[in-house]
Amino acid sequence: MLHSMGYQTSGVYSIIPSGADAIDVYCDMISDGGGWTVFQKRYDGSVNFYRNYAEYVQGFGDVSGEYWLGLDIIYLLAKDGVELRIDMVDYSNNQVYAHYSQFSIGSPITNYRVTFSSYSGTAGEGLNAANAQGFTTYDLDNDNLAGNCAVDYQGAWWYQSCYTSNLNGVYGIQNELRGIVWNWPEPKYMTSTEMKLRESS
Image (cartoon, rainbow, N blue to C red; front, side, top):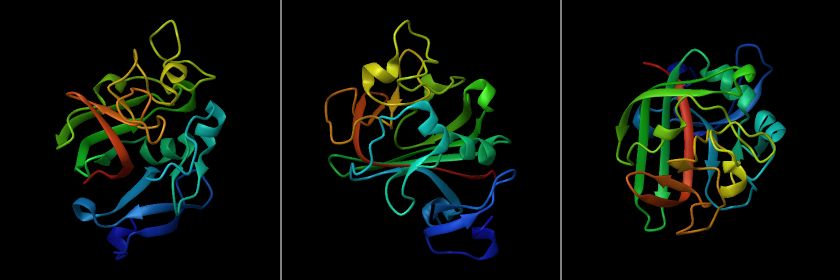
């Protein structure tokens, strides 16, 4: 929306999601034509992402740095279907991305169940195990295992049993599945991630 109104510079903007008050978000106005609202950003490990469910619902961090926007706001932005782009950089400084032309988040009653389709990109289809899953944290288990994937891998995610990606895992860890992993077709360990959405074109 902001991009179509002529805003061309990436940075922090104020938006008003339907059904919510104004909030500050980081907008990427460059990647693939721009217009992206960033809802997850990691690059230096300054923010702890091993948090409880209430914190993931509300959001945490600083939109000028590392942050998670909050499941409530992500739901309001994505409930009717949007595009999703994930930009990542690994420990060899390789830059890869994943794009899904259809992405939506369910209501709080569904535990913010995620659905997506139509992958393209250079990263591999690392979200596939998350499709149709609710969100799991160490204090609320919505995965398909008897145990809790968030506890086992020290993250929070749309875990199945357990994952093919773990982008809210522990920062700075290589060669361990509790790190920031894009696990398709084999594990890739990331130093930088951005998850972002925009209205479908």
